[in-house]
Length: 159
Image 1: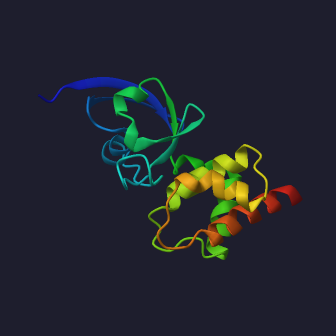
Image 2 (image 1 turned 60 degrees about the horizontal axis):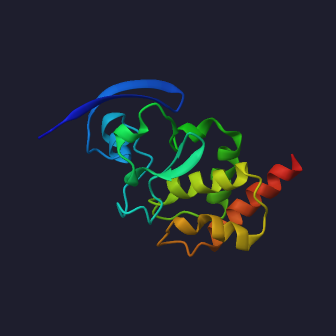
Image 3 (image 1 turned 180 degrees about the horizontal axis):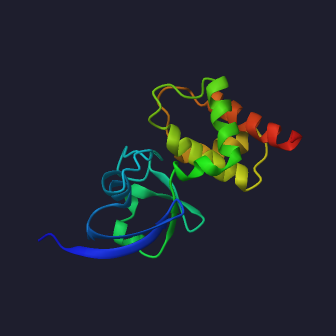
């Protein structure tokens, strides 16, 4: 049985109303129905962090939430973070520090890092590592990611 349900939400500032299969997870809805392919599906168990999104101000795993559960919510995907000037600085720091290689984890890692920065996170590398511990990267070894986040915070303190 292919039941569908009508949902309405705001995604990256745009009002969306659609009928969706009741069992479709949120990240698949964003990718397949809305064409927002920045968030990735990795483990489908909420462990890897590749599908990290902001929903009503909280960071969540899009693979663990059904699209129908997001009815009435405000969602920001990695594409929506592009309007945040900190996002530009963070992306530049990732590039400078070679904090990305294959790029698969990068959108979720950037989303988690932006959340840390927005919350007033410090340059303490242990605190940064703790905050991004829910985002897996199989390529970089994390040190360059931690350096990029710390540099972004330092640059923000100077401006």
